[in-house]
Length: 261
Image (cartoon, rainbow, N blue to C red):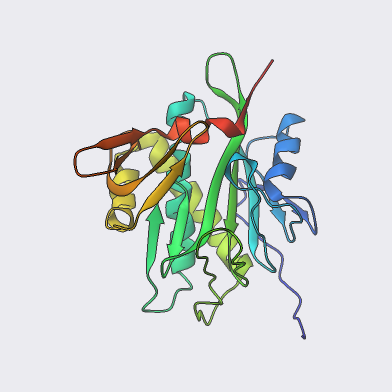
């Protein structure tokens, strides 16, 4: 197959770009840099991943020519609030995909970190980092994986890619640049206006999915259908006719955060 040379990623100036041709994962690479004191805004672009990471250090099937980013953040909010960044990033990943989408493509969200394209998982967001003794992140890595060109199907659920769904444009550099612009804008909005505008935008694509969803926590597995998301980002899951379960963002993401000694 003939390949054209890929252009260099050019994110907004507030990002400090680190490009690696091949690494275990963009997220793990960014975690190592953060642990060594790298600044907020350091953005790792891994052109190829050999051991991609999902949540709870589960394996992410990376495929070929997909998008893998790891962004170092230093939020000042308590952990439970800082985890709302996952919902911000999910919005931004979908908006970036939408810029290249075909007219009939269906984009939806699955709480709190997936983008579904025509009902297949096309993007996943992770949060990892280190927690201080006051439950405020000492640093955080936002991981972004998007199936742009390839969509491996050995993940235990249906997957989708932009190319696989017939997108005429499936450019991972353009996608990354769009995500970076959107994320800066929405992160500032979240910092200034709180979670209300994030929740409103998220519910436009996230509340109508009536398919069963299974949430895996450290010591529990909960299956039900989406009922609502409250003003803190907590999922309200309908597990049967008479019972609702509330699942908080911090319970969902905490296993990927180390407690600093």
